Length: 344
Image (cartoon, rainbow, N blue to C red; front, side, top):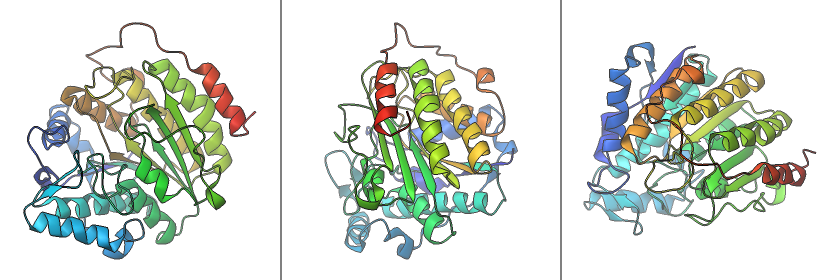
């Protein structure tokens, strides 16, 4: 497999020491990739700032101008959780644009798949304001590029961050060109993502939320993907799969309470690679979202790269092992969702 990655040092300059979403996250990832000897086998995709015309297909011009002005004034806060540093606007433009460049490389056949190691993250960013550590919605911008500039008709976005991607959902809530599929702890920040949120108008049925209780782990996630995501994706027939990849559903993450292991995360990446190979010629692009235990994040991302390059999930390292205790069962709930989404 030919696998690419996006990285630029400017992503480290969006930083607030002591904040959970800080530059140490990306430093830990890059160090892990170097120590594992993975970087020489990867192809770097140079990041380019996203064109404002494309950015404004997702975000209002007034909002992007507000972020720019705040950064130029030295930074500040969009809300209690979401900061802007002096170079955050430049970093956010490059983060969205870097993911677009990764998608472009995959769609043009220069890469089989890719992972955009970008910051700030994006899936909480709504059209007119950022929130949840996110400034611009990288996944939504990249999907819009694929649909409106690269000529695709259908894009699947899979979001396995432990928090619901409310911004991504909102961007395509009335759009049948994007199937948005999210697994997330619920009720939990940001409070959206109920299973009855399925889209409106032309987009009705194209948003699929899987709100999960505390304690769902590897077996539950695999069951969700095989029994719900796979048949939904086959019915939708995407031409590209984008993944909002958050590693905060791991059992050791400090901000949440799901029980995925590193092996479990590698298994999800493997299922997505298999799904992409079946449905869209392997066209699969990940983008970094959450994950706040640095060891988990670094190993989890490295394992994702291993899987993208063809390694079996079973052969990926997991020095932390599985969660202790029994998983919260969710098979009955998934079967109800299958019925609700007309799969059985």
